[in-house]
Length: 148
Figure 1 (cartoon, rainbow, N blue to C red):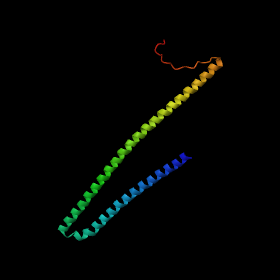
Figure 2 (cartoon, rainbow, N blue to C red):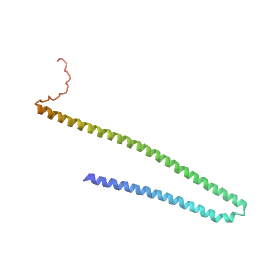
Figure 3 (tube, rainbow, N blue to C red):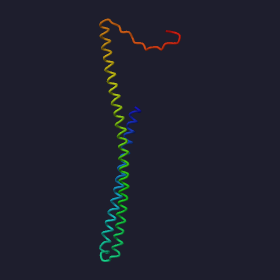
Figure 4 (cartoon, rainbow, N blue to C red):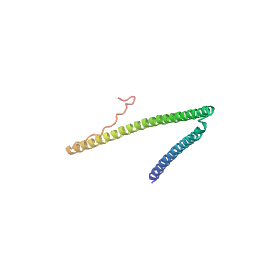
């Protein structure tokens, strides 16, 4: 009963984590899109007013260049986080693959053991049918000092 409850709680926790991740991703996307729309609207409104004045146009171009640099910095930070997350995922994937390989080897050993037990049972049954009683093997005992 506790195992079922634990599985339900674990499933619910995973689902909640996925929802939080999705919400955070969508919030970040919304924030970036809102900034982009704001910048584009600002450019659209200011450009016709500045088209005739060269000094204001230079200042406007410098502002746009500053915005571009900010976007590039933000993009590089996001790319760095992405590469960090990918490296973390690759590490976890390697760990998972090693665990799966160990599990596969374990199941192979269990299967081999079961086959050996089945063969042993078959041989014991044949020996019993022939009237031969096998002697149980005893572990070797270390010799004690003073005895041969």
